[in-house]
Length: 323
Ligand SMILES: [Zn+2]
Image (cartoon, rainbow, N blue to C red):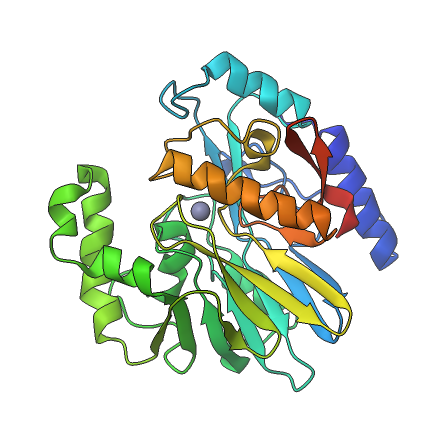
């Protein structure tokens, strides 16, 4: 039985207060074998200027501890970092938190549209929770893709047929990311566990007419600009969102799980394809976030997926409650 951490309770209480409802935590049934309670409400809304931002809960991966998770940190160090962040150390909690942006004209832009229920049995609730938030998937006009890992792109395709879930939306991703995964020679270079992913990408994306590849740091929609944050994958990008005087950055997997990447950005994770480049991107983005006091969200941040960064010695600390 999971007992909610102090942070869970603070977040739940904050949410409940914001919504004027009694605080409660929804426990997932035993069939899923999931230990982490889902959020009281599976979506979280706030404004950035004229944009309505909605964080949408897709689920969580309760990753078993593994000595190869970091090249330069032991399982014991991983456990103590989790405890220091107020999280359970029984496993590594890796939530999936896609984001939706609604413009004043009702147009919806998604940022990494979830796992599609094809990555972990305890995730795949994105579409259901998007609708629960009052957002119609038919209104989605653009989808920003940070990188092509399964938890970020499988929500674009049906499980059995690979048919597009959003055939009428423009899918935006970076040139280097597309190039890397669609190069026929990549199959030989990848570890066996990643080859199926490359094959699925090669069987879908190059045939889709609604994919837009962007190079460098450019405006991809009014008020939305890409930021190059390579390392996690060769063409990983983040997105800067601004409206009026307000701004935020969707960092996707630049920080991966902040329990590690904020306090110890030098830890080299197995999840980052190029460790030193990933660390450079983390520090570059963190410096910008601290200096400009910008709200940050991340795809694997603890629910509700965002907060503010501050400096902590030569590293950083994330305060979640500022979303
Ligand atoms: Zn990810």
